[in-house]
Image (cartoon, rainbow, N blue to C red; front, side):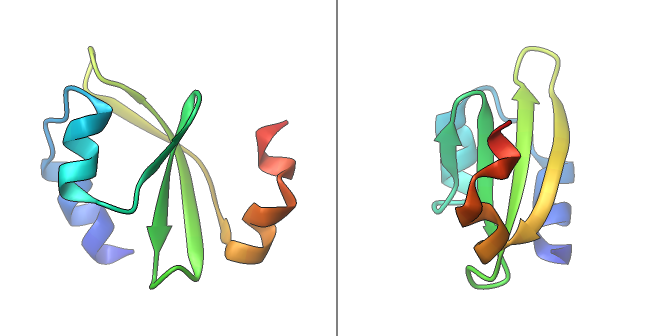
Length: 73
């Protein structure tokens, strides 16, 4: 998580492709960007406003919680 935070804090992403250059396992699940954290043990669900350069963390959960899909509601 610390590594993700340090990279994201310094990032100047202007598109999802930029995110993928920093984190090649990131997925776009509209309107969310989902990051694998801790060797695929956790998921960080975010929304990124690329124009304003703002990232909102919507949820941090285990892989099992993520798979249930309730975070999409």
